[in-house]
Length: 123
Image (cartoon, rainbow, N blue to C red; front, side, top):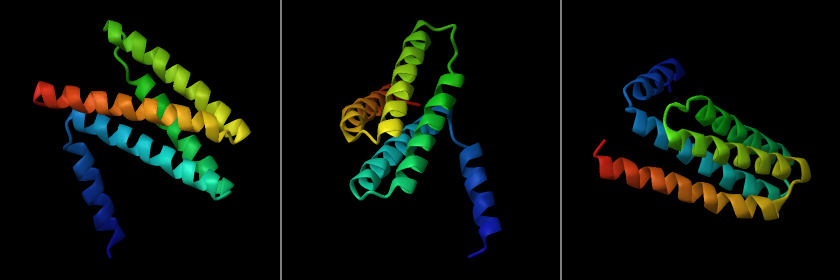
C-alpha cells in the first residue's frame, strides 16, 4: 500500500472534520489508549502500558490547551483535565491498575456526554 497516499488521505480527513468530530476523535482515542494501557498492564507489557499512558496525558494536555477560557464551563473542564492528568501520573508511576480502573469509566462518561451534546446540537 502506498503509505504516502494513505498519509495524505488521513490528513485530508482530519482537515475536513468539524470541531465536534475532532473532539470526539480525541476522546475516542483517549478511551482506546486507556483500554490498551489496562490490557498491557494486565499482561505485564510495560512498554505498551507506558506508551499508552503517556499518549493519554498528551491528549488531555491538548484538550486543556485548546479550552476557550471565556466560557465558565472551560474552567470546570480545566479542573477535570488537571485531575485526570494527576491520576494518570499516579497510574504511570505506580503501575496502578486500581486507579486506572477508577478513572477509565469517568473519562468514558465524559466522552459520552460530549457525544450526546454533539448529537443534541445537531452539529
